[in-house]
Amino acid sequence: MTQQLKRIMLSSVELFCLVAERKSFSQAATVAGLTPAAVSRSIARLEQRLNTQLFIRSTRQVRLTDNGELYFQQCRNALNQIIDAEQILKNQHQQLSGKIRMSVPTPYGHYRILPLLPLFMQRYPEIQIDIQLTNTNIDFIGEGFDLAIRGRHPKDSNLIARTLELAALVVVASPEYLESKTPPHSLQELDQHECIQFILPSTGKNVPWLFKVENEIIEYRTRGKLRCLDDILGTVTLAKQSAGLLQTYRFIVEQDIENGHLIEVLQPFSGTTRPFSLLYPSQKYASAHIRAFIDFLVTHLKADIA
Image (cartoon, rainbow, N blue to C red):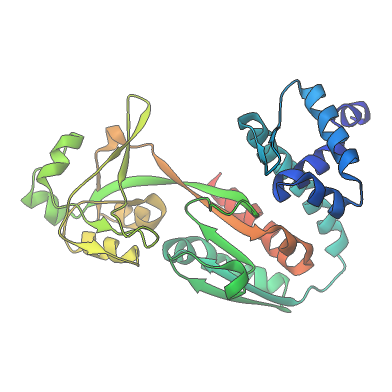
């Protein structure tokens, strides 16, 4: 293990991640307390060892290559795990306290996050959690948020993103609706059905339905006169009231499928997912009570869906 770590050059990996996050060799050097030349030499040695270019450098910007982006995601996760392990040991004999402000999408909050909070509060009774259930984008700095969970990766690369779940999608309808309409057996037959729409707040457009066709994921634009503009749980209520077909997350409707309130259709085209990721500015991880909450969510959510 020692020889392997020497080959990996852990300090160079840390500098690489710092340059990737700051998009600047000089800024990374300032944070690390080194000269830009020293940082540049470290990255050059790393690129030589990996036999690949990690950054595209110009006089105006520094950006990751495709291989650099792939390497960065893996290295960032690995370094986070090391930090997590150290913090767990440090916090074993501490009573953590503080406030956490978090934004979570409505369905993920109700079905994944809120059920876990009582257990977290039992372990850390001095920590206060303010949780906002919303499907709209937030301004971390302007609105004072520490954490967020979102179904799409942000454009802001200064945020750290840790995938919590690849949530499976299903198409469902009520038994009464399927008695009045012939159930679809192909994607083209969706055009003959009322398909309940969810409007993505960030774009104002219908969310396309995803299907797997011959091991390829495709988007299919469905049509429907009923559209929910903010709360995705409203689409489930409409489906249970026989308003039409609905594609939604399995974790929202699995109980309704089990008790017969909703019926899954188009199973041959299932197998698609959408990601949910935990997002936070890199500096937020410096707070012990926030790290404890991040560790808790990652551990419990990944355990629950394993």
